[in-house]
Image (cartoon, rainbow, N blue to C red; front, side, top):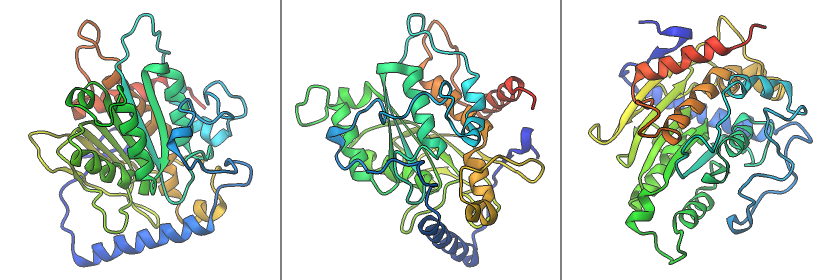
Length: 331
C-alpha cells in the first residue's frame, strides 16, 4: 500500500543469485564513480585529520551553522531547508541528554567535505545541542578512528577502561549515507563486541561494502530506521531486519521515489548527476534530513515531564514526515 509522500514499506524479498551479483556490481560502480568524481574544487579542506586526539570536536574551523551561513551552496541549503525551520532548542528550558552522534560519509568522501549534507548536518547538530552532545563525522573507512574517539569520550575518568556505567550513561546515535550507511551497522557491531549499546541507527540509501552486512541490525541497537530508493546505478538496501527482534525495534524501511519531483543535486559533478542521480537525490532530500533530525530530537530532548512518546513506531515516523511537509515553504 502506498504511503504518504512516495514512501513505501519494504517487504521481505526473495534474493536470487542475480540480485546478489547486481549488488556487487553496484558496489563496483560506486567505487568507480568515487574515484572519478571527486568533490568540486574548493569545497573540501586540503588536509585530512589523521589523529582523533587533535580533532576540534566542535567541527572544522571554517564551517559554521549552515542555517545561518549565507555562503552555504544552494543545493545544500535546500537539503537542510526543513531542518533549519525547526524551532531552536532553548537549553535553559529543555533537558538535553548526553550523547555521541557519529556520521559516516559515503564513497571516498573526506570527513570534512562540506559539499555533502552529512557534514553540514553535523554542524547543525553541534549548534543545536551545544556541549551536551559530541558530534563527529568520519569516512566510512575510518572505523578505527571513530572507535578511538568514541572510547575516549565514554571513558570520562580516563581510567583506560570503559565501565558499565560509562557505557550506558551516554546515548550513541549513528547515521550515514551509501557506504557510510553500511558502515553504520559495521560500527554498531564493533561497539557490540565491546558491550556498548547504541540508541539509534539511521541508514540513508545504504550500499553494501564488500564483505559487510548492511541488512542485519545487531542486538545492541535499540532502534533502527532505513531510508532507500531503488533507481540508478547504486540502489539502496531495501530491507533491514533485527538480529534480535526482542532487543531491536525497526522503525521502518521507507522507500523514497523521485520520478514525480526532482531534488537539486548541483553540488555533485555532472557524471554523478547523470548516471546515478537518484542516489544523490535521497542524500539531498530535505524530507530525509527533517526526519533524521526529528528522530534524534526524540532521543535527546525527551524528558519525563515533557514529551510523552518518542519516535518509536512507524506511525510516529509518518507524523514527523507530515509535519515536515506542513512546514515546508512554497516555492
